Length: 246
Image (cartoon, rainbow, N blue to C red; front, top):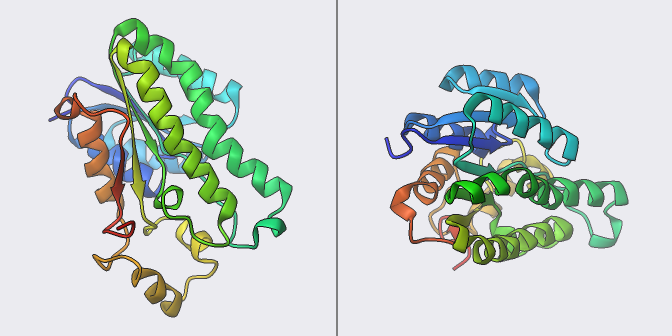
């Protein structure tokens, strides 16, 4: 029960890594708000873990403000914030990615972190404590061809994590990131372009431990970094990638 008594918001928690993080947090005693643009997915996970479902478009300031209002009404405070929601563009030469896809990646993967900070950091500062976790990617450390703008958004997120950590440390707020390698999530097919046994084998060959990341892997790492066990850790981008970035 490492998160007993804590309140936590996990974005993009209706499926994939976010769902794994939400499940782990609830199992460790946290009250969890399951936020997702997919309302049905959020409802399903919230029912499963006894949490609160919140329909939210993290790239919209109004939507994030409504989520903050809902969290305030339910709990009065937010102890843990996980910025997990993310999207990618399909693999393509960098100059062929559409402006619409570029804007969507930047809005969901980058602007959302600003909007969430604007909504929740003041409360954490006032409380003198808090933990923020950004879900970045190995793509921000070891970029893959044809995912250029997705790579760039995750590199930005790693730098943002360190900048946030330095600024918020005096207020008692810790900020860290995790860098998963691709896993069995709704984004896997988008990363690979197409999902075939041959492409999977080629991708897995780049991971020394020989398997994809799982939602449980992310939940375990996230739980540690957001718990008091990690009270001396801030500004790190932990690779949870089976050795891919070695």
